[in-house]
Length: 354
Length: 61
Image (cartoon, rainbow over all chains, first blue to last red; front, side, top):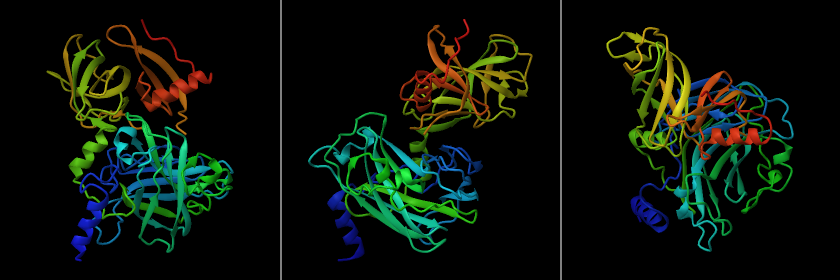
């Protein structure tokens, strides 16, 4: 049988030909928040969209969208963590991982909690200075259950392909809603609270001690880097080739959770303040949090010269489709009722991440 | 593990006068958080209020 026939048979036997990757931005193409963040010491979404870094350890990182990728696989970007301050002494309660959070309504095909529960397979390319055992955990957030598997990094600073299959879980259905139901966790640092038990290689109620048994300290030296790309989570027991999506398709998927706003229209309510409204390009998962991202020449009034936004004063409306915000401008000569437009790209951000 | 370091919080009224959001300051950044339980920042605000760690100031009239 030809390779193409083998692939067609494999794909046809277990899952759809398209939209089989349940991960958004698995190729790390989209980085709306910026391509690099330095001095990262805490939790947050940095660089590549949809990938959240959670940490309690003492390390400091530069997190970036990198162009270091596995050769010949069709990837242009990876997610890179560069250790700038090492975690030299792991505390018992330290837990650090890169994670991806998935809505329950996008996971109903897993048939979790039924006798027909599907296995899933995770595949990815990883490049790590630190070699040894790493843990990959799936957490069911609706039923407080988990399963965890180990993978090994054999060669330092070398791209390696990994594939890990998790059994289906006949216990605990996933909510069919917009909340987080499943969390994929790439462990990087784990204290004894998370390593002292027996690895939960079968689905079970969450026991912290069974989450990351054997996990090395990936951040124990400032020489260390950890990079990942090509992450695919799919139904079935075999990894299929990575489902490459266009940048535009991936961006739209990401914007359900985070979007930069470059245009708003409203009116002046005082000499320095305006209330402006924006429609989102993509409906949000939930009503989003609004932040001011760009303060340079961001506000321009009709019939006036451009001025800066100096603060976000209030968010008087935030829905899944649009938002309304009161902003203060450096322009002190506005007239109440005057039409105002904000026309600076990326001036506000709407965040509906899980 | 969200654990926002919220240094101030204040309710905001919508155009009809009802409470619609909470303006918070986190590490010096101002955030407008809608009162939607599915919003992760609002969920954390609720957690801190229930734990007695955060008090939200009244909205302006």
